Length: 381
Image (cartoon, rainbow, N blue to C red; front, side, top):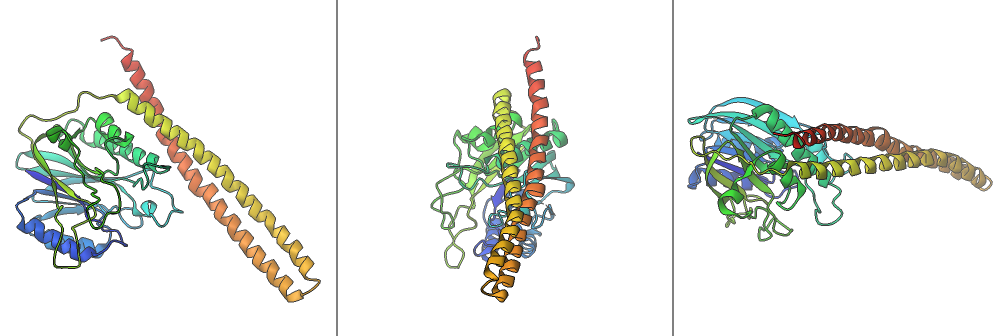
């Protein structure tokens, strides 16, 4: 059996969405890939989702989309075999609501489970898309969002699947040299199929792709637990000729051939304690930053309210020369000061408070697990 994962680049601002989706569907039907299960990410817009399902529903008759947030999770899983159960987990760290341009907060990103009844038995397939890091090599303020997303992923997988066969795939937005990769492989005991089979990490975000303006990166993965893997390869990396669309997506896909009957993979050489410590420090530091940022917003809010008085004093001075302009200045100054103060109050009292509480929740879980690991490490066997 085969599984394909692909981020289709279906964001509202993405180029040539319909043309790329049509070309993608034709390629899947005509090429020799023959995947049994399809995991798509960034299928955000209803019209693109409808097109994709309509183009593929005769070959992949079973499908499930995971609605979430304002825009939607973007996660669509399609299968040739029956889907017998589904579940979805929306990540706790969703992003910054004020960062409208990047939009992660409004997408409602998460991880979706489809339990599929294949001819070889039931397998739990997890389709995932985490928060992007945007500039991971510089001041990476979004790293902790990605890392806590992946922490949520492994917790979700453990709580739903236990010792069952698991395939986790998608755009994880982490490189193999980053802590996010360690979280999903070490804490999740998941085996990176590409690295296991080939000893390398394939480039799925390629600078040669006409839709990419970035260095080469490995961001997309197929990871398994209690599943046998026979092969893995980069897929959907062809360039398109003769139409407006230049490639299927800004990402390349991965296709893996798996079985539930062979020697099943399971990660045993796990460095859990160091990964926990690193994640714990990252969450703690981000919590301190959020507290400091909240205080700064409160200070700006009070400054904004205080400037109302300054506006009326300045209006009183100008009144000596023009009653009309003095009145206008008072109202303009009042509105600007109130809007400025209100914005900062919202940030401090709602957005930052929510971020703090979420980080505290994650930190408390890590505290318990870290202490448990210490107890187990010190136990004589």
